[in-house]
Image 1 (cartoon, helix red, strand yellow):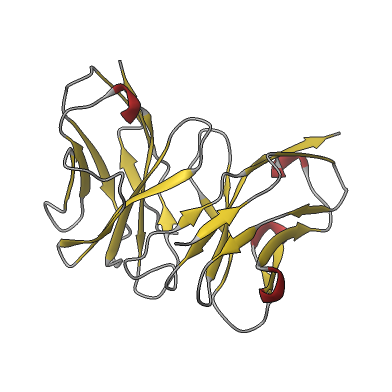
Image 2 (cartoon, rainbow over the protein chains, first blue to last red):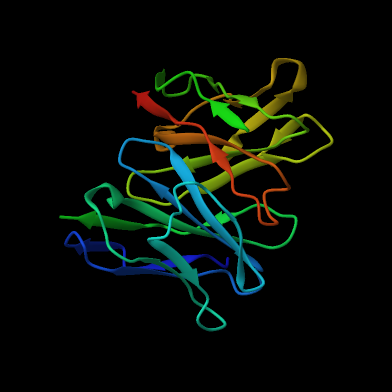
Length: 112
Length: 116
C-alpha cells in the first residue's frame, strides 16, 4: 500500500538555526499538507499546498515558515530561524482531490 | 470556525469490553468527519470517515462511528476491544471532503488504556 514518508524521523537543532523537514507524498496525490503536534497537545493544521502554491494556511504559519515542492516527489517545510516553541512533531499529509488525507509517520523536531 | 471537542482525555476499558469514544463538532454546514488513531511514536492512521449517506460508517479494525446531526456528534465505537487498541484517538472535521485544500481541525484526543 502506498504511504507518505518523512525524513528525518528526529531532528535536533539549536535555536536560531534553519531546518528543512522533508516529505514524499503518495505519488498520484495532488494536495499536500503540514501539521504539527506539540507534545501532549492536539494536531494543528499549518498549511496546504496545491498546484505549486499555498492554498490555505493557519495563523501558526507565519513568515518564518515556508513550503516548497522542489521536484516531482518531495514536499518540504522550512523553518527559517527556529525557536524553542517550534519543538513538536511535524506531520506531512497528502490527498487526491475529494478524498481523505494520508499522514506520514512524522518528524520530531527538538529545538535546544 | 469549526471546532472539535473530545470530552474524555483518558478512558480505561477492560479487554473484551465495549468501547465508545465521544466526539462533538461545531461547523456551520454539513461536516466531513474522521477518526484517526495514533500509536506511540507513530503517525496518524485513518480509522474511518463520514462524507455523506449512511450515518453509520464502518472502519478498519472493527471500529464504527455514527453521525448524529441533531447532537453534532460522531462517536466511535467498538464492540470488543483488544489490547492492541491501546492508543490515542483523534476526531477531526474538515470543511471539504478531507481532500481538496482543506486543513483538518482535530480534537485534543482521547487516550485509550486497555486493562487485562
